[in-house]
Structures are given as C-alpha cells and as structure tokens.
Length: 299
Image: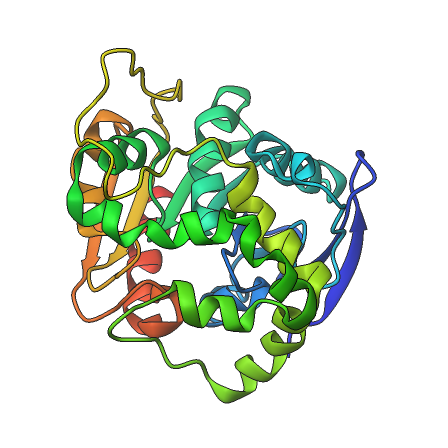
C-alpha cells in the first residue's frame, strides 16, 4: 500500500504524494490521469523504486490534494506549474516525467518547457495525445472526434445538479460508451469510489476538461482545418522520449501516434496491441519492459 506525504507548493496548493525509492537515485515523476490517482502507476513504481526515486502525486483536484473551487484554477499551465513546483519543493533538480491520460497531456508540456532549463531530461507518455496532433484530429478525423464526444458531456453544465447530488459515477457510465470497459481491480475500485462519489472531487476532476483550451466540435460541425487555424505553440521536444500506446484505446485513437516525429525528435514508440486506454495497469508487464529498455538506454 502506498504511503502518502503532504507537500505544500510555493503557490499554496497542497498535494498528497507517494514518494518512494532511494532519495539519491535518479528521479521519475509519475502523473496520473482522469478519473484515477497516484495508484495508476502502482505496478511501474513497485517495479522501479528499488533503482529510482519514484514520485507520484495525487494531482490538483484528486484524492485529498487541494481542490480549489472554480474552473480558472484548473487551466492547463497552472497544472503544469504544479509539477515544476513539486520538483522544486522536493529538491529534485532533474527528473524524468512520466504521464498517462491527462497526466500525459501535462507531461508533453512539462517536457517541452522543462527541457530548456535542464530540469526534465527524459519523458514517457502512455496513451495521452500531444496537443498539436490531438487538436488537428478533432477537427479533421471522424474517428477521433466521435471518440471524444464524452468531453462535451463532461463540460456540459446541464449535468451539474446530478453531479452535486451523486458525484461522478453515473456520469462516467453515461458519457464513456465504450464497448470494452476496463475491469478495475476490486481493491483499487474501493479506493476510487469515495473520490468519485464526493461532489467536490467530481467537479474538480471535471474542471480539468472545462478549463482546457482544446476545442471538441460536435459530429454535426464541418470537418477540416478552418482558414484561421493555427496549431498550439508547443516547442519541439528534443530530449529522449518514449510513447507507449495501448492500441485498443476507445477514447484516444491510434491516429494520435501518427506524425509524432513532427513534435519530438528523439522518439521511441511502443505499441501494445492487446491493451486499452489504461495501459499502465491493463498491461503492466509490457509497460514495465518498455520502461526498462528505455531507461537503460538513456540513463
């Protein structure tokens, strides 16, 4: 069972953090996504924390970490700054950033901006889209746009009354119309359910979607890049990167790994055929093997 410590960032935000492994070992900083917590990465951390310092926060709005009210507190760059602040507070001068889902979306940006200062030396992404490629797919690709309609549901205030009364669980059932739902370990689900049922947690988690600048058109909107379109201004990532992708992901389609050489110049892509969106715990052995090979090659 992971033991959490409370870390107060320079901004006043407080995060619960699973910090394990030798303090003088190279640091790996793990970011979870929606609707989970630090336990997303449990199999990888337990595999690696004999050799690396493994740091995994419950991010802003999740678990018992700070969950300020209001969508404005969940703008993407504020969430990215949480990660830089966490590393600074823990005295970690260099680290590898590792992220899944929303945590992976942040990890793309943490890598892109943190490489310039030398703080971020490597990056690993698991089933999380790069903002440039994802936005382009939402505008041009029918498959990805259809798969992302749940984001429009998460942003819709029409559901707020039900969320205030019942939390997140019912909305997840309605919005995520996947054919092959992942089966949570019962012990993990028991830990997650109180967070999903807590309206404060539920609104905080949904605010990650509501504050995001990503545009998700409806299926009735035209397909194609509008004349005024310009991609999000994200620097090319030049540090070593590993992208691990569960190819059965029903939310983030495999088209997200096409064209990654446009945004990352030192890239390895590991496709995992039998796994879906939650690849860190759906296919832990395959993810661990990919991590071992990447870390050994780039240490």
